[in-house]
Image 1: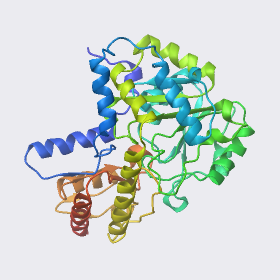
Image 2: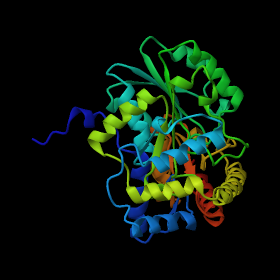
Image 3: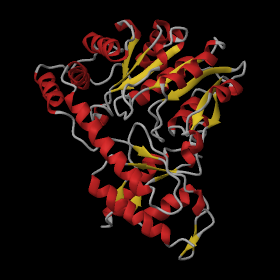
Length: 397
């Protein structure tokens, strides 16, 4: 009998990747599908970054790197954190990994013991609770609905903390909601955390530069928390480098050493050429980052305007990232052509098969009343996708 490990059987498959696969299958059959399910910029990596990678290949940067990444890259990250975030770190407090996804998982596996609780605000990125389960910890879900802009309050955080709480995972700007915590909101959470010294914060800031309200605020800025915060970031979203797989953590040196010990046993350092490309991303011109941010902001304005015109959708205005997360539970219980919509996964499948638009149901994000749409696509696609969605939803009675 073929039996997978209990560890693996406890995990759910990634809903976002599953939806991408389904839409690809329909496309392969010749169906014109507009894909709003995937969480990556539709831009190409900027030319100066590609040039640095080509140069790295030609100069034979093809050997193993140090487990934590090349010193030049870690120093570039130190400078970025200082210049952009006003935060002081040393190269020994940085560890690079195969994407921010590995950085998050590394940190969880390094800090969490079996039975430890990790607070995960919902809506959450699909992988957070699964990574906590992988570490044999217990995800404690704290729900924040559209009426509070999908952001948890200090009172909710306080109520969720127990003697078993080991960490809080905070994602701002957020996947899947696009919500961004202001400095004041973070200060409120920091005041609660200051009273609970056993709680660490994993601050996922991968969408930092896709921000429509001005400056990004990091929870690491509060001095009373700095020794308990691990920042996770990387080049994927800001520099359109999802496939290059470079992420990093910045945090207390003892945690970074633990992460290096772990990574040294199962992947070693990330791709050498990608590291040289990431170094160029951090040290070179930042103009392409702002150009992409402006394009995303224009698309945000467009999709919000159009989605608000869809009867039955409840829409808030995301302040960062490139996702819209409309509440769509008004359609549950309705039917068309013999199929009934019972939940957001049914609705996402209906929109794919009837409207030929790929979205992701909110259940796996901890928000079964919503669906996630990525607007990392052209203006034309956004206009046509919402037209199709509106048409498909109008058939539900």
